[in-house]
Every structure is written in structure tokens, then in C-alpha cells.
Image 1 (tube, one colour):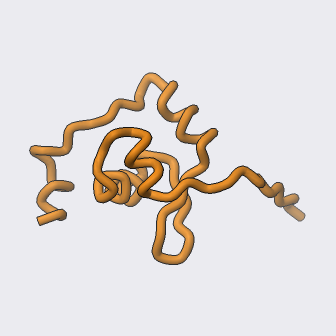
Image 2 (cartoon, rainbow, N blue to C red):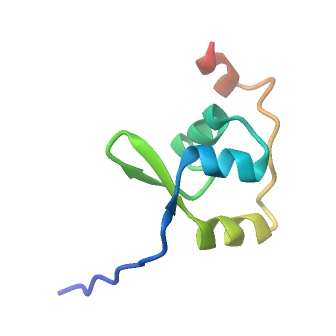
Amino acid sequence: MKKVLFNREPLLTTAAVSKWLGIAPRTVCLWAECQEIPAIKVGRQWRFRECELCEWLRSPGAKLKDYSNSRVTAAMI
């Protein structure tokens, strides 16, 4: 049987992450939906672990992307 470990680190809200990264809350939600940023879906809301976000930001592939000319922007309209 697989052992489940619980991480008791508080989860950050979309608003907190957007303020931290300096981007719009909607962008944070879109990145979470597209799996661009590590996130957990709790009901209908996205939540984030600070340790995972720090690790993601330190990774070479993590860049705050410009979606101005992508299909993600089209989905917002």
C-alpha cells in the first residue's frame, strides 16, 4: 500500500501568487490550467505551495512568459 505524506505547508491563493509574481490573477489561473506553474486544484479554486513555486522559479525552464500573441490570450476574450 502506498504511504501518503501530508505537507502541512499553507497553500497560497491565486491572489497572493499574482501579487508575488507581479502578474494578473487570471494569468496565474491560466498558467495553472495549462500546467505551466505547479498548482493544486481545490474544488474550483487553484492553490499553490510556496516551496514548489520557489523551486519552479529557480528552474532554468521557468520564465514568466508573454502570452500576448498566444491562444491562451484568445481564450480570455
